[in-house]
Image 1 (tube, rainbow over the protein chains, first blue to last red):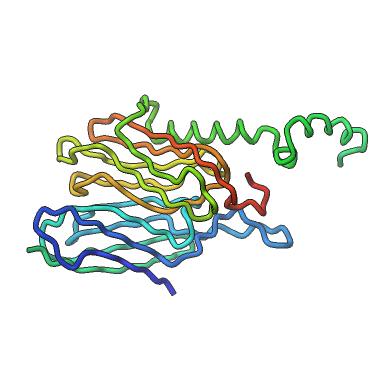
Image 2 (cartoon, each protein chain N blue to C red):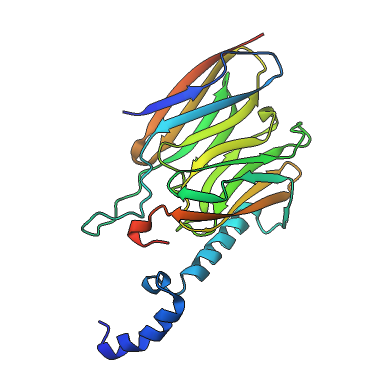
Length: 106
Length: 156
């Protein structure tokens, strides 16, 4: 089961630059490794992360096999209004995971 | 099938190339360099990439190439007129040069990202930033990797 953690500060002042950290539990199989019998293990990675803030996209990332297992991404945004961050991960073999976090802007 | 005669003829070249690269495609370095160049060209569309503005932080000595923390920050005011549109991270020695491409905008407030990468071998890590005015800036860091990612597959 897809497991995703999102870390957003619970509250922030308006206009403050806040840091968002997110981690998805995923093996990120590169597609370059082989089994003991020499067969290639097929690629199975997360390819995309999209972060929306009250429905507006603020960050997007494309991931490649060179990302470490359990991909962690840290990025920033300006706290403009109270609301929710929606993070969506998508990947090979129909992998989809979503997690939201709310923030109060004072 | 390699005959004994052919095998013996290969030995001096293999010894000259060193122990590790003897097991690999002799053109692997040229292939990797070409792949990296192609990746950079795909990102920039042939525009020049200037060094500066970008700060890539990677530990200079990496114990375990499977998880290498790295962070990229770009010197930019991040206004709607002048901001960073994208940050790309590439490696020199991986089977594929790409690591991550991050797309931000003026709403990011600060042009900085952090993540963790796999690095296959001692070599360069490159960060390229695309600014809203269409210019490209980069930073290159050389890292030494003691335990490689994917070493057991002989892919370095």
